[in-house]
Every structure is written in structure tokens, then in C-alpha cells.
Image (cartoon, rainbow, N blue to C red; front, side):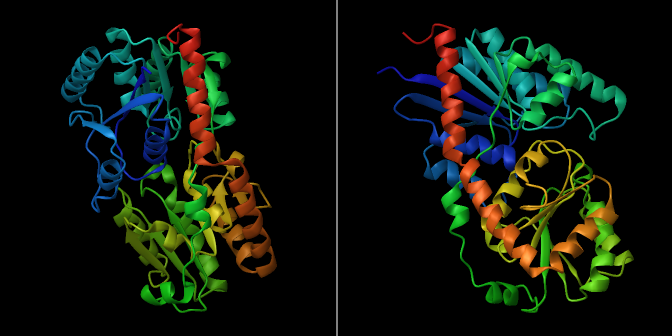
Length: 390
């Protein structure tokens, strides 16, 4: 049987939802049906976790160092031609790109190399909240132009589809929403000694714990989260807040905690390997994003049984059942974040109900197997439409 050759391209494999989605797709596509290759730029992988995953699962991986997130005309041109020549040499049936930079360069390289089927997953968008008006318009123009050569665009949520359409990227028929899936068994089976884990972190056993796993960059709205904490600390002086992740705002967030007089309550843990074991001691998971494609971390937290407080942006309302598995709040609103945190922390019964509902909700709807099955189904449909399958 001749296998269908598929190339996935992502700008970076740094720890996060887009990278995990891509790795899971590449790894779990039927190896009897597909021959899959993965391209990315350099990845920040201090613990070697991603490299081990690629090696352990024998993923056919190609590094293109010039593929970087920042706009760099020289590197962008180099990356484009390296990707183009690689495609010309290997003759892929399908090219599936992920994220903005890889999406632009990869799709045009696919077009010029004669690839029959071009698919893109943006994993969110940069149409608001990231850049100024002029730069944003350039991105919108590039995305709408590149959509013309794209067969299908996979959005992570229905809201993502609607936003792309509203910004004029393409007509509705170009899009197909497919929820980003997670490994249900891995997260549902997390079983740790909460008391010992707290002890290892120097947290009193009776102290409530809230936290987040996120990039410490402006778009994630973490300053609004920090600004919400003084009111929470007044009522729960023993509370500990775990900030897991790193980014450009780390020092300013640490300074904000000092300025609010809550440094003893807030722990900046940086990048961590066994994140799920830390999230398992949370009483509430917080995501204060200003723009979010879906919020994969919210699914993972809910599956572990942690209620969430999250902003009502992007695809988040599709993955959090407001009042059932957590509380949704307006973006840029520290007061509403603090009120939601206090409400859940003050009511053990509500917290327990949300925990149980969260586990059930995610396990029923957001498995990685369902995601890969839908992506594979899309491939097969496009292969038939393009008459690639005999």
C-alpha cells in the first residue's frame, strides 16, 4: 500500500497548546496509511522533554533554524527557500501548517512546489490584542491572501471560525472547527499526595492554592490576575499562588507582587516539567488572557478536576461551562477575577461540584483520539476531492 505523504510545519515546538496539538497529530495519525514528516524552527526545550518525545516516538523531524517567530526578512527568505526545496525533493501529498509564520511561509512554499492539498491550523489569531493597527492590518491582509491558496483552515473552536470570517480572511466554507484534544487517560489518572506536594513547595497543608500555566507575555493578561490578588489575600491570608511559565513580563509581574505586598503569597516557578502534578494541588486554575484561540490548559486543568476562572475571550466559552465547571469573567477586569476566586474558594460544595462536572465535561468531548480522527477524516475527504486517492 502506498502511503499518503504528509508534511506538518510549525514555527516553534515550545511547550504550549499549539505545539502539543501538532505533536499529538503527527504522532497519532495512522502509520499504516500516512508517512508523516514534521518541520519546525528552534525550540526552547530546557529539559529536553520535546526532544525525547520526538525521539521516543520515532517522529521524522527536520529542523530549519531560520524559521523564527519574529519578523526577519533575511531569515524568512532563507526559511522559505529551505522549505520549498525540501518539498520539491520529497513530493508531499498534503502540507498542513500551524501558527502564523509557518502558515504563511509553508503554504506559499507548498503552492510553488505543486502540493495538491494545503491545510492550515492557526491555533488562534493575531487580529487583536497583539500589535498596533498598521501591523495588524498587514497580518490580516497576508492571512486573507494566503487563504486563497489554502484548501481548508482548521479553527480550534466555532468562535475562531466566526472571528476569521468577520475579519474577512475567507468565506465560511473554507473553515472547519476541530477542538484541540488532550490525552484523557494521562490527565484523568493523575493521583498525587497533595500534602506531600505542598510540603515540597513549602506550602502549608491547609493553605488554599490557585495558579496558572501560561506565557508571561502581555497578551495573557497576567497583570490583571496579579492585580486581583490583594482582595483575595485579605480574605485568605494563607493562600499561595503558583505562576508556572516564563516570558517577557516575568520581572514586571514579580515587581507588581512586591508592590501589592503579596510576595510571600505568590510563587514564580518558571518552566516546569511535571506541570500536571503541580496543577493537581490547585483549588482553582486561572487564565486571564486578552485573546485565546481555545485555552488547552483549561481542558487539562478541568480534566484533573480543577475548577477554572477564565476570561470570556476567543474560544474559551466553548471549553468552560460557565457556572458549571468554572466562572467566566470579562477581560481586563481584576475586580471580577477576584470576586470569582473568592466565590469558589468560599464554597467547598460549589468547588467539589465544579470539579466533578469538569472531569465529566472534558472526558466526554475533548479527547486527542477524536481530534486526530477528525483531522484524518478531513485529509481523506480532501484527497478524494482532489482525486489523489485512487
